[in-house]
Image (cartoon, rainbow, N blue to C red):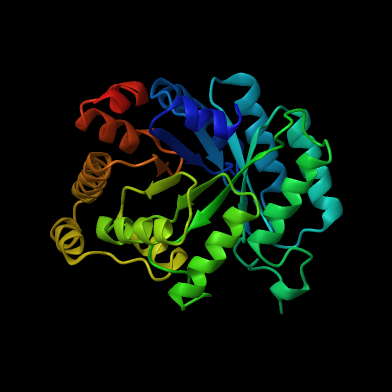
Length: 306
Protein backbone atom coordinates (compact mmCIF):
# COMPACT_ATOMS: atom_id res chain seq x y z
CA UNK A 1 0.00 0.00 0.00
CA UNK A 2 1.25 3.48 -0.88
CA UNK A 3 2.49 5.30 2.20
CA UNK A 4 0.08 8.21 1.61
CA UNK A 5 -2.83 5.76 1.82
CA UNK A 6 -1.38 4.29 5.02
CA UNK A 7 -1.26 7.72 6.66
CA UNK A 8 -4.83 8.42 5.59
CA UNK A 9 -6.01 5.08 6.99
CA UNK A 10 -4.06 5.15 10.27
CA UNK A 11 -4.26 8.15 12.58
CA UNK A 12 -1.03 6.93 14.17
CA UNK A 13 1.26 4.45 12.44
CA UNK A 14 3.32 1.78 14.18
CA UNK A 15 6.13 0.34 12.12
CA UNK A 16 9.18 -1.91 12.57
CA UNK A 17 12.65 -1.99 11.05
CA UNK A 18 14.45 -5.21 10.08
CA UNK A 19 17.90 -5.84 8.65
CA UNK A 20 18.71 -8.60 6.13
CA UNK A 21 20.15 -11.65 7.92
CA UNK A 22 23.69 -12.62 6.92
CA UNK A 23 23.34 -16.40 7.28
CA UNK A 24 20.78 -19.11 6.61
CA UNK A 25 20.52 -19.69 10.36
CA UNK A 26 19.76 -16.01 10.96
CA UNK A 27 17.13 -16.08 8.19
CA UNK A 28 15.45 -18.94 9.98
CA UNK A 29 15.48 -17.10 13.31
CA UNK A 30 14.01 -13.96 11.77
CA UNK A 31 11.16 -15.79 10.08
CA UNK A 32 10.39 -17.64 13.28
CA UNK A 33 9.70 -14.21 14.75
CA UNK A 34 7.80 -12.83 11.77
CA UNK A 35 4.52 -14.25 13.09
CA UNK A 36 5.08 -12.31 16.32
CA UNK A 37 5.64 -9.09 14.37
CA UNK A 38 2.62 -9.78 12.16
CA UNK A 39 0.43 -10.29 15.23
CA UNK A 40 1.16 -6.70 16.26
CA UNK A 41 -0.42 -5.43 13.03
CA UNK A 42 2.17 -2.84 11.96
CA UNK A 43 1.28 -0.24 9.35
CA UNK A 44 4.45 -1.19 7.48
CA UNK A 45 7.97 -2.52 8.04
CA UNK A 46 11.26 -1.25 6.65
CA UNK A 47 14.34 -3.19 5.55
CA UNK A 48 17.82 -1.71 5.87
CA UNK A 49 20.52 -1.48 3.21
CA UNK A 50 24.18 -1.99 4.13
CA UNK A 51 26.93 0.55 3.57
CA UNK A 52 27.77 0.78 -0.11
CA UNK A 53 24.89 -1.52 -0.94
CA UNK A 54 26.67 -4.41 0.80
CA UNK A 55 23.33 -6.09 1.49
CA UNK A 56 21.68 -5.00 -1.76
CA UNK A 57 20.64 -8.48 -2.90
CA UNK A 58 19.75 -9.63 0.61
CA UNK A 59 17.65 -6.50 1.11
CA UNK A 60 15.78 -7.17 -2.12
CA UNK A 61 15.36 -10.86 -1.23
CA UNK A 62 13.95 -10.04 2.20
CA UNK A 63 11.61 -7.35 0.83
CA UNK A 64 10.19 -9.68 -1.83
CA UNK A 65 9.85 -12.54 0.65
CA UNK A 66 7.97 -10.32 3.09
CA UNK A 67 5.77 -9.05 0.27
CA UNK A 68 4.94 -12.52 -1.04
CA UNK A 69 4.83 -14.66 2.09
CA UNK A 70 3.54 -12.39 4.87
CA UNK A 71 0.86 -9.78 5.53
CA UNK A 72 3.56 -7.18 6.20
CA UNK A 73 3.98 -4.19 3.87
CA UNK A 74 7.77 -3.77 3.28
CA UNK A 75 9.54 -0.47 2.68
CA UNK A 76 13.12 -1.01 1.43
CA UNK A 77 15.92 1.40 2.22
CA UNK A 78 18.05 2.78 -0.62
CA UNK A 79 21.25 4.78 -0.18
CA UNK A 80 23.32 7.10 -2.35
CA UNK A 81 26.62 5.31 -1.70
CA UNK A 82 28.36 3.87 -4.78
CA UNK A 83 25.18 3.96 -6.87
CA UNK A 84 24.88 4.94 -10.52
CA UNK A 85 21.72 6.01 -12.33
CA UNK A 86 21.75 2.67 -14.17
CA UNK A 87 22.01 0.80 -10.85
CA UNK A 88 19.16 2.80 -9.41
CA UNK A 89 16.99 2.29 -12.49
CA UNK A 90 17.38 -1.50 -12.22
CA UNK A 91 16.64 -1.49 -8.49
CA UNK A 92 13.54 0.67 -8.83
CA UNK A 93 12.26 -1.43 -11.73
CA UNK A 94 12.65 -4.60 -9.66
CA UNK A 95 10.77 -3.08 -6.73
CA UNK A 96 8.02 -1.72 -8.95
CA UNK A 97 7.63 -5.15 -10.55
CA UNK A 98 7.45 -6.77 -7.09
CA UNK A 99 4.61 -4.44 -6.08
CA UNK A 100 6.63 -2.39 -3.59
CA UNK A 101 4.96 1.00 -3.10
CA UNK A 102 7.31 2.99 -0.87
CA UNK A 103 11.09 3.59 -0.66
CA UNK A 104 13.18 5.01 2.19
CA UNK A 105 15.77 7.31 0.55
CA UNK A 106 18.93 7.77 2.63
CA UNK A 107 22.35 9.37 2.39
CA UNK A 108 23.93 6.16 3.67
CA UNK A 109 27.04 5.31 5.66
CA UNK A 110 30.45 5.34 4.00
CA UNK A 111 31.64 1.82 3.06
CA UNK A 112 34.32 0.49 5.40
CA UNK A 113 35.99 -1.68 2.77
CA UNK A 114 36.61 1.07 0.19
CA UNK A 115 39.82 3.01 0.69
CA UNK A 116 39.90 6.77 0.00
CA UNK A 117 36.14 6.85 -0.47
CA UNK A 118 34.85 10.31 -1.40
CA UNK A 119 31.09 10.94 -1.41
CA UNK A 120 31.47 13.66 -4.01
CA UNK A 121 32.61 11.06 -6.54
CA UNK A 122 29.20 9.37 -6.31
CA UNK A 123 26.50 10.10 -8.87
CA UNK A 124 24.08 10.62 -5.99
CA UNK A 125 25.90 12.76 -3.44
CA UNK A 126 23.04 13.69 -1.12
CA UNK A 127 19.73 12.09 -0.15
CA UNK A 128 17.87 14.86 -1.99
CA UNK A 129 19.46 13.63 -5.24
CA UNK A 130 18.03 10.19 -4.58
CA UNK A 131 14.60 11.62 -3.70
CA UNK A 132 14.51 13.50 -7.00
CA UNK A 133 15.54 10.42 -8.98
CA UNK A 134 12.87 8.22 -7.36
CA UNK A 135 10.29 10.94 -7.95
CA UNK A 136 11.24 11.22 -11.63
CA UNK A 137 11.05 7.44 -12.00
CA UNK A 138 7.38 7.57 -11.02
CA UNK A 139 6.62 10.63 -13.12
CA UNK A 140 7.97 8.84 -16.20
CA UNK A 141 5.59 5.94 -15.68
CA UNK A 142 8.04 3.61 -13.96
CA UNK A 143 5.51 2.59 -11.32
CA UNK A 144 1.99 1.25 -11.79
CA UNK A 145 0.67 3.69 -9.17
CA UNK A 146 0.25 7.04 -10.91
CA UNK A 147 1.79 8.71 -7.85
CA UNK A 148 4.95 6.67 -8.24
CA UNK A 149 6.77 5.40 -5.17
CA UNK A 150 5.99 6.90 -1.80
CA UNK A 151 9.23 8.29 -0.38
CA UNK A 152 10.50 8.45 3.18
CA UNK A 153 13.58 10.34 4.40
CA UNK A 154 15.54 10.45 7.63
CA UNK A 155 15.42 13.23 10.20
CA UNK A 156 17.87 13.89 13.03
CA UNK A 157 16.36 15.42 16.19
CA UNK A 158 19.81 15.94 17.70
CA UNK A 159 21.45 17.19 14.53
CA UNK A 160 23.56 15.50 11.87
CA UNK A 161 27.32 15.09 12.47
CA UNK A 162 28.10 16.25 8.92
CA UNK A 163 25.95 19.40 9.31
CA UNK A 164 26.67 20.97 12.72
CA UNK A 165 24.77 24.14 11.82
CA UNK A 166 21.23 23.26 12.96
CA UNK A 167 19.63 25.95 10.78
CA UNK A 168 21.36 24.62 7.67
CA UNK A 169 20.41 21.09 8.66
CA UNK A 170 16.74 22.10 8.84
CA UNK A 171 17.03 23.74 5.42
CA UNK A 172 18.32 20.43 4.04
CA UNK A 173 15.41 18.51 5.57
CA UNK A 174 12.87 20.98 4.18
CA UNK A 175 14.52 20.68 0.75
CA UNK A 176 14.10 16.88 0.80
CA UNK A 177 10.41 17.29 1.58
CA UNK A 178 9.99 19.91 -1.14
CA UNK A 179 11.72 17.54 -3.59
CA UNK A 180 9.05 14.91 -3.02
CA UNK A 181 9.47 13.14 0.33
CA UNK A 182 6.14 11.97 1.76
CA UNK A 183 7.24 11.42 5.37
CA UNK A 184 10.16 11.72 7.77
CA UNK A 185 11.40 9.00 10.11
CA UNK A 186 13.60 10.19 12.93
CA UNK A 187 16.93 8.78 13.99
CA UNK A 188 16.73 6.97 17.32
CA UNK A 189 16.66 9.22 20.38
CA UNK A 190 16.42 8.66 24.14
CA UNK A 191 15.43 12.13 25.29
CA UNK A 192 11.86 12.97 24.25
CA UNK A 193 12.44 16.67 24.78
CA UNK A 194 14.91 16.62 21.89
CA UNK A 195 12.25 15.07 19.64
CA UNK A 196 9.48 17.43 20.71
CA UNK A 197 11.66 20.50 20.15
CA UNK A 198 12.86 19.24 16.75
CA UNK A 199 9.31 18.43 15.66
CA UNK A 200 8.25 21.98 16.57
CA UNK A 201 11.18 23.39 14.61
CA UNK A 202 10.10 21.29 11.62
CA UNK A 203 6.67 22.88 11.85
CA UNK A 204 8.19 26.36 12.04
CA UNK A 205 10.24 25.55 8.93
CA UNK A 206 7.05 24.79 7.02
CA UNK A 207 7.44 21.00 6.99
CA UNK A 208 3.96 19.51 6.82
CA UNK A 209 4.52 15.81 6.08
CA UNK A 210 4.06 13.13 8.79
CA UNK A 211 6.98 12.76 11.22
CA UNK A 212 7.64 9.37 12.83
CA UNK A 213 9.48 8.97 16.14
CA UNK A 214 12.29 6.41 15.99
CA UNK A 215 12.50 4.28 19.13
CA UNK A 216 15.15 1.65 19.91
CA UNK A 217 14.98 -0.20 23.24
CA UNK A 218 18.46 -0.80 24.65
CA UNK A 219 18.92 -4.54 25.01
CA UNK A 220 22.51 -4.81 26.25
CA UNK A 221 25.50 -2.70 27.24
CA UNK A 222 27.18 -3.80 24.01
CA UNK A 223 24.23 -2.55 21.95
CA UNK A 224 24.36 0.76 23.83
CA UNK A 225 27.99 1.21 22.81
CA UNK A 226 27.20 0.32 19.19
CA UNK A 227 24.41 2.92 19.20
CA UNK A 228 26.83 5.54 20.49
CA UNK A 229 29.20 4.71 17.61
CA UNK A 230 26.57 4.53 14.87
CA UNK A 231 24.45 7.50 15.92
CA UNK A 232 27.09 10.07 16.75
CA UNK A 233 25.68 12.93 18.79
CA UNK A 234 22.83 10.92 20.32
CA UNK A 235 22.19 12.05 23.89
CA UNK A 236 21.87 9.38 26.55
CA UNK A 237 20.16 11.01 29.55
CA UNK A 238 21.89 10.66 32.92
CA UNK A 239 18.83 8.96 34.43
CA UNK A 240 19.00 6.24 31.77
CA UNK A 241 22.75 5.76 32.21
CA UNK A 242 22.36 5.60 36.00
CA UNK A 243 19.77 2.82 35.72
CA UNK A 244 21.93 0.91 33.26
CA UNK A 245 24.95 1.33 35.52
CA UNK A 246 23.05 -0.25 38.41
CA UNK A 247 22.09 -3.20 36.22
CA UNK A 248 25.25 -3.57 34.14
CA UNK A 249 26.33 -6.88 35.70
CA UNK A 250 22.94 -8.46 35.02
CA UNK A 251 22.08 -8.85 31.32
CA UNK A 252 18.38 -9.45 31.97
CA UNK A 253 18.19 -6.39 34.21
CA UNK A 254 19.85 -4.25 31.53
CA UNK A 255 17.26 -5.41 29.01
CA UNK A 256 14.42 -4.64 31.44
CA UNK A 257 15.78 -1.13 31.98
CA UNK A 258 16.01 -0.57 28.22
CA UNK A 259 12.50 -1.81 27.55
CA UNK A 260 11.06 0.21 30.44
CA UNK A 261 12.74 3.40 29.21
CA UNK A 262 11.51 2.86 25.64
CA UNK A 263 7.99 2.11 26.93
CA UNK A 264 7.88 5.37 28.88
CA UNK A 265 9.17 7.21 25.82
CA UNK A 266 6.31 5.76 23.77
CA UNK A 267 3.74 6.56 26.45
CA UNK A 268 4.75 10.21 26.58
CA UNK A 269 5.00 10.54 22.79
CA UNK A 270 1.56 9.02 22.28
CA UNK A 271 0.06 11.27 24.95
CA UNK A 272 1.29 14.38 23.14
CA UNK A 273 0.13 13.16 19.73
CA UNK A 274 2.42 11.81 17.04
CA UNK A 275 2.06 10.71 13.42
CA UNK A 276 3.75 7.43 14.14
CA UNK A 277 6.33 5.43 16.09
CA UNK A 278 8.98 3.45 14.23
CA UNK A 279 10.66 0.68 16.25
CA UNK A 280 14.25 -0.27 15.48
CA UNK A 281 13.79 -3.93 16.36
CA UNK A 282 17.25 -5.46 15.69
CA UNK A 283 15.18 -8.37 14.29
CA UNK A 284 14.02 -9.28 17.79
CA UNK A 285 10.32 -9.29 18.57
CA UNK A 286 10.44 -9.73 22.36
CA UNK A 287 11.21 -6.13 23.30
CA UNK A 288 8.65 -4.68 20.91
CA UNK A 289 5.94 -7.07 22.12
CA UNK A 290 6.68 -6.21 25.75
CA UNK A 291 6.34 -2.49 24.99
CA UNK A 292 2.93 -3.07 23.41
CA UNK A 293 1.81 -5.25 26.32
CA UNK A 294 2.97 -2.78 28.97
CA UNK A 295 1.12 0.00 27.16
CA UNK A 296 -2.00 -2.16 27.48
CA UNK A 297 -2.29 -3.10 23.81
CA UNK A 298 -2.30 -6.45 22.05
CA UNK A 299 -1.64 -4.87 18.64
CA UNK A 300 -1.33 -1.60 16.77
CA UNK A 301 -5.07 -1.17 16.31
CA UNK A 302 -5.62 -1.44 20.06
CA UNK A 303 -2.75 0.95 20.77
CA UNK A 304 -4.14 3.42 18.26
CA UNK A 305 -7.53 3.43 19.96
CA UNK A 306 -6.28 4.00 23.52
